[in-house]
Image (cartoon, rainbow, N blue to C red; front, side, top):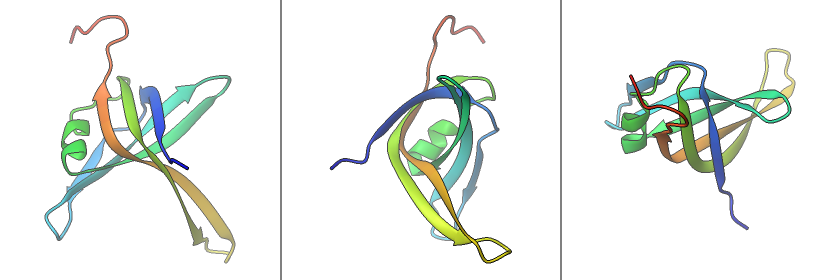
Length: 101
């Protein structure tokens, strides 16, 4: 089985990037998709993909290719919670109507 996702959505939060101790660039941002209802997705980016995503602005339409990753943690009350994010292998800005700045 393959774990691959393709998404097109609107950037809904500024891209946050940082360089970690190993020298790798990592970051994340959120995109909004709207099929029948609005949904927000956290996208994690690494290395060259993080460099590309750093130029994204809120409101831009972007294409993201990657895989879904689900992790669990315990909240303050000791309850197990799950978070699903997208680890992007590739992302790019998409022009749907006009590419004017």
